Each structure stands twice: as structure tokens, then as C-alpha cells.
Length: 256
Image (cartoon, rainbow, N blue to C red; front, side):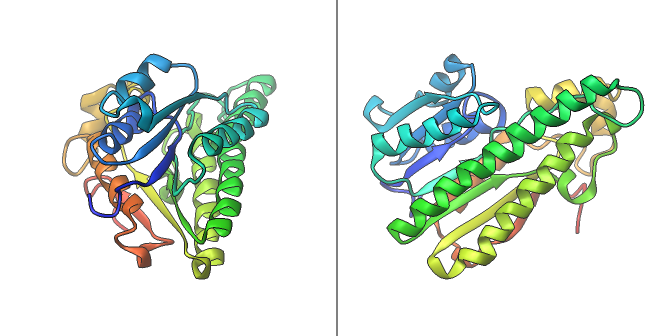
């Protein structure tokens, strides 16, 4: 893709789901890729198999630990010297922490961990990226949010996830507004129901895949490749004035 050639890209959560699809899509381009994973190194290796060894770096980091976030950034920068694009994809979803029946200890654990991984770690990485982009004259952030950030979520058990995705969306939009004149671009991608392990787990609590499909306008889940193709386009810088936009990818099931 024009505009991606020789770019260095840091992608979080590259071992499975949307992140793995993004890694596979970027591996088709002439990029250098730093692929973060939490525990599934084999998944990250498979997702980046299309890239030659000298054009990729796999880095483990536990986003429940701020020190690991900092180590990821320092390791990536030491390897590449310059980072052009940061794709904030890593996230967790717990089906607990709702308002109805969970005990206080579980509620606090779910909210603490969800906000740490999905918001604090992600914005910590954004902070590193913005400072770096200021130093090199610009760069691109792509943040994977969710349609739950706009419409809420219909399942009280996942309220912490919805809140975290709204928070990271607001952070990305604030960066877009504040740093646009410094050539720092910030895009938000808001998927609907995507064909991933996380969505399959969620569907099992809602009557199964067929029951979920019945609520969708296209009657099917979003293929992860659709998200990956969009992220590759945004990473290319081909449409600078789209910065600040939230791009819905949900097969017309939620139209604003």
C-alpha cells in the first residue's frame, strides 16, 4: 500500500483476534513491525510469519504492569530508532463487574484490571508516542475502541469494558484536537461484533452465535480482515484530514 513503505509500526495485542489480523495484513507490506503480545508468543509468531526476521520484533509485556508498558516502548525504540505509527489494540473483557450480583471484591478486581489494561496502559503508551512524534515531526495513532463506547452495551456484566472503550476513545480524540498542528494524527476504529475468540465467548452468554446474528443488519459478524484493511489504510497517512474521526465497522447494525 502506498504510504506504508519503510514505516515502523508498533502494534499491541498482536497474537490473536483483531490484532493478529492487523499483523498479518501489515506483514504484506514493506514495513518494520514491533508486535506486542501478552502471553501468547506462538500466536504473535504466526501472525507475523510473513515478515522477514530482520523486519520484525516480538516483545512480551503485561499491561497490568506500568513498568512493562515503559519497557515495551524503550525496547521498541531501541530496536527501530524511530516509530512512525502506534496501533493501540490490546484489551481485555471480563464478563463480570456488573451492578446486579457480583460481590464487592470481584467488582473491584474487574474494574481495576480492565481500566489498567484498556485505559491506563494504553494512554501511557500514547504519552510515549506523542512525545516521540513531537520530537520527529509527526506520527500516527490508531486506537481500537468499540461500538460500545458510543451506544453503551446491552449486557451489564461487560459494563467495565464499555466504559474503558469510551475512555480510550476520548483520549484519542483529545490527542487529535490538541496535536493536529504538529502533524500528529489520531484515528479511532469502533468495531461492532467481530469474529474473534472474545466475541465467541461473549456470544455464549447471549444464546449463541445464531442469536447474536439475528440482531445484526447483515446477519453476520464483521470479519477481522475488514478491521485490518482499514487500520492499514489509516496507518499509511493517505487521508490526513480524517484525523479525529471515529470509524464505525459494524455492517450497518449501528448507524449514527
